[in-house]
Amino acid sequence: MKILSARIHGYLDIAVIAALVLAPTLLGFGGRAASLCYVLAGLHAALTALTAYPLGWLKVIPFPVHGGLEAVMAPALIAAPWLVGFARVPTARVFFVAAGVALAVVWLITDYKSTVPGAHDELHGGHVAT
Image (tube, rainbow, N blue to C red; front, side, top):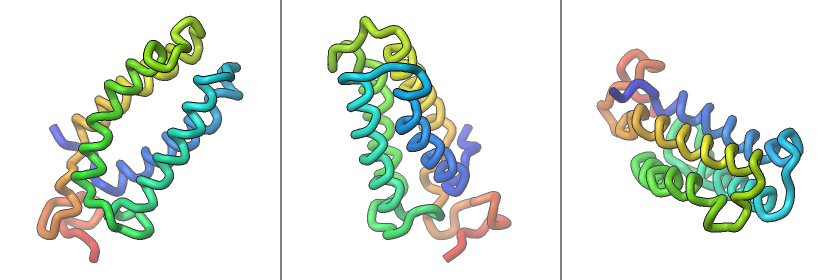
């Protein structure tokens, strides 16, 4: 069931960027886990700014490509504590596993075709704003 529009997904992208920036301080972890959070926040901010959807600025990356990148990132986030070497830091491990699971759920319920002309976008009365 694809219940999230591109606009709502964009708002979630902004929340993800904020969560990645704030997590190390709020959850009290540093080192590799914190560095990875900051790098991912920057990359996600760039992806958000470049995506062709309502909250994108430059609109050069098609929204379905954005979705494809997120499909790859969900399992990568889950594996990150072991791949990057901070699995023994409980708060960082739980944060990254939870973030990966959340991203997978968002990926499953987002309508990545909602920015295609003629596609349904419930925030625009069934029409995509141009």
